[in-house]
Image (tube, rainbow, N blue to C red; front, side, top):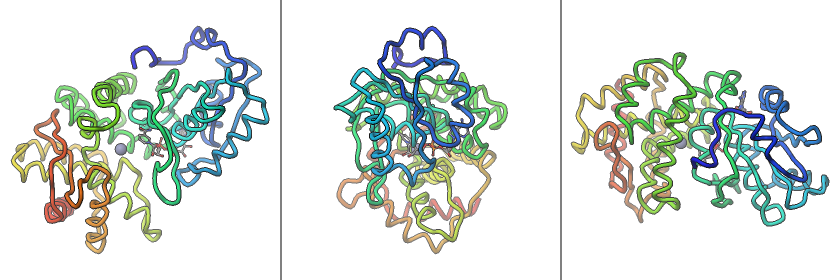
Length: 342
Ligand SMILES: NC(=O)c1ccc[n+]([C@@H]2O[C@H](COP(=O)([O-])OP(=O)(O)OC[C@H]3O[C@@H](n4cnc5c(N)ncnc54)[C@H](O)[C@@H]3O)[C@@H](O)[C@H]2O)c1
Ligand SMILES: [Zn+2]
């Protein structure tokens, strides 16, 4: 990672690139807010490919549009694609570049906090298919990842807060000192340049020890067994306002910290510190008990399960996490009721 990661845009880096053609993939938001910054660094004859923002467009049809644009512009294998946007642009743009003419170069320029600290590391690329998230894709690393926190200035606060859940997660699973540091401040007073560097390092260290998620990499799923099950319910229920990924994961981290206490893996005071900070940043979204059965059903679908056993990644102290720890439906139910009671 160290040799592909570049913090802040640098003219000399762009000048050193030698490509036959350059395309920049954007959506309407990153075209408006981020492209004007990047443009100054690019050769004049680059092309722009604009797609519509949103997870609902991370699909094969949009890929068709991207591949067509590259084909019409006669991109050969010496062309390069810059993916300028959040995780949707990064995952899909990387997937399109990796499959166009059996793979051309691409550089990730993540512009959301979530994509900077999470999606940009680990080489997972792909799209959604027939209602299944990230169903079609591959592992491939970009040529470079350019992280520049000046892009975060235009990011809606709710998106920033959502991405911050992965930062909190990285501290909780791997670095108690950094947890102490971030919890001294609220969302508005964080040093994003330092935080992104730290968070990326945590994810990189974990991923490089287990690139294909056979074991250790599962600790990155802390908060996700329950959080993802809650996110799915909210997504499938048009009558209630959607929860962003990180907002659901924040709830999931409180629930899973509670289960860690029940299993005597962490102390009650550690759990209270975790829930206190998370509630301060995210407030509380009570989970309707009508959804309980569907949430429990969803946790059974989790990719980390073996057969009918739900495997979770649980804290074993602040800054340490275990994985493949069996939890049952009752423990999950109790943890959600606990969250509701806070
Ligand atoms: N590859 C991985 O390892 C990995 C990890 C986590 C998530 N993901 C994927 O990432 C996606 C979610 O990514 P996301 O949270 O970045 O959402 P996103 O890509 O949908 O971006 C969120 C919104 O912010 C806008 N935006 C982006 N940057 C902006 C900026 N600087 N200023 C103003 N607006 C801006 C976008 O247009 C969009 O409307 C999901 O598809 C998920 O599957 C991938
Ligand atoms: Zn996540």
